[in-house]
Length: 466
Image (cartoon, rainbow, N blue to C red; front, side, top):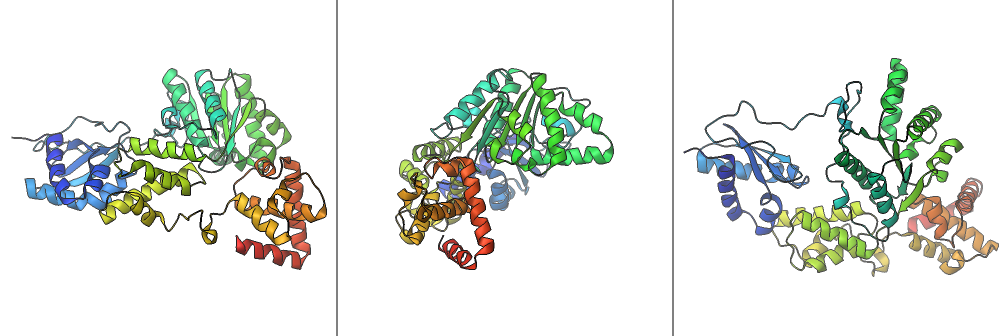
């Protein structure tokens, strides 16, 4: 009797369950499904992209040994990511070799243009990330406006906010929202041409077009797009010819009522681009994403746990523990979850608060421990205030006396040096001062560092303290 791929995989999993800790089995193997089987290869899918490499690296030998014991064949395991967790090919059967194991499609040059005919478009592929959809984006006080604007743009491209300019620190969800807009537009109108790329890619392709004498094709290719998504636009700074070409591309698309979405680590005025580009970036809506607050961090972790099907003893307590200690970005939160899962699997222990403290102790520090405080802008203000004999509140006041101006400028300088914050965000930390004041303060400190050795030594001492 021939076994289908699903039946074969089910029997292997039953054996694997007895050989692995329950938590490890539920996390990494239980969500998998068989896709197909050939004479020596078993292909399975997982809904967790992080599990692909992990299962192949950690459990392939165990699973191959089980298959050899059960069926006399040591199958090679191939794990593929499937967003729905369901097979992407019909299952084969044991004893009926497939001509060749099915492979995930190789991206073609035109694949970055989603949902549109692309006969004349040739370019490296950067498809939209399947995980970055509106359904998976957690909305909180830190990103409400940006999320609402992204939804509005997706529902009515080029009618509400054009361009939509989203800025904020690393790992806060700018790229997620950008991809979500792309997915939503393609779902509503499959014929639309949607292009996602980074500003660095735009620059490299422009250079290639200039060198290859294909500028006309380059311009035609970009100017027939319906939705242009450009990530990290700040990297156009200092590239005059790229700014010139992007200026004309922007005008052509905007005049044709095509939607443009841009992201950056700071607002347009702080990037250092040509004034005419800055002006155009501000034509639509400029909105920021800030650091998530505690409640939002917990919501992000809870959603991630639900999506990955995690079963954690004392779930809320563990999530609260991680949320209290991971404050810098969404990416840091997800990294902590991945590390915790890996540690649980390796040590074969159930996930609880004690395990979380043990697993994450090397990267997370207790905010109650004064010797191990995480570096924050507030900590920089307090350290500088202490060194100059003033209070942090005085640095936020409107007073401009020299005894306050100097430490205030130093604090702004060190915050800019240590954190990925825009000039506007830094100004808000000091009583709502505007970005020009912050620029002036940073320049003053840089000038004094080059001219005053004693001043430099004091700043170096502060840096070491931080």
